[in-house]
Length: 361
Image (cartoon, rainbow, N blue to C red; front, side, top):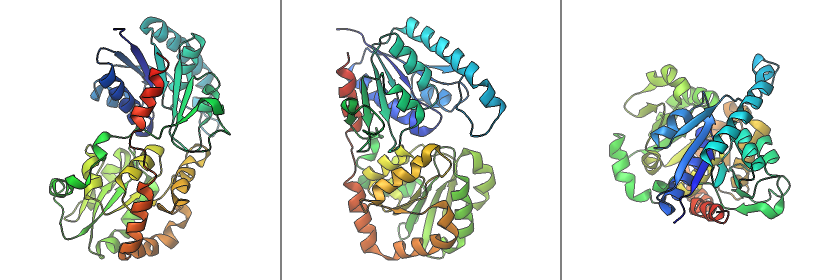
């Protein structure tokens, strides 16, 4: 049997890292003797998360362009040239059969180098509105696995495969874990639980909102699991109390989803895909500070199917309290949102993506 080798690249945020790890895990199941190498950006979170998942990773000296003129931007051409050279070296030494990119700064030079060396490449695009790196890479990629319809205006149509986004398989049956999850967090079984997700690094505006509204939320007989993010934990941990669990990072996502009755979340692509599988009522608060405002577009795709509520950051002060309270009181609305978001779930995404990768071996 041939011993296959795969390079995966994705990073910067959990939304790029976890899909890459999920794809590697599925490939490993199907090819137990395969060799794997991850390539990330030197100072980003993938350098910790990938080794924790049991894979080797090499870091490139690369970062994205800032929106204003900075020293970082002036260094960009040098970083890009260095990263391209390093990527060529990695590909030459490791000799992969296929290279898979899930987005993030490092995947640009790596997939560019792989394409130039004649090695098949696969792009996994999580968002409903792709970033510039994937648009450029798509011209040479062999397959483009997407999570949303109608991306033919950005990518060559003949290469697009609608697969969905890879998600953690432990989310498939969370209903059976509810009691265990409530005990794990020391929650009250008689109260509704609000889960707040700000993404792996945290969301300043969401944290500010929850701090301002916390008294009002608790007055409605609701308990809270508040993931405020690593960057903000020191500032918000003071709100830890009997009915409020403030955490920086969540290891057991299956437990928080199982315990939740209502969820407030950013609209990163991986979060949106997970929430479709979880099937709980969601209020999306998209980050307006991301490329091409793709979080708003991700959330809007769900709202268009009557599967979630969308609140823009600019509407929070005037609208949040009204929207939250009316959702909490309306069981019918909660049920409708749950049923509609669940219809959009693609639980087999990882397997379908791996099937596309296998076609290139």
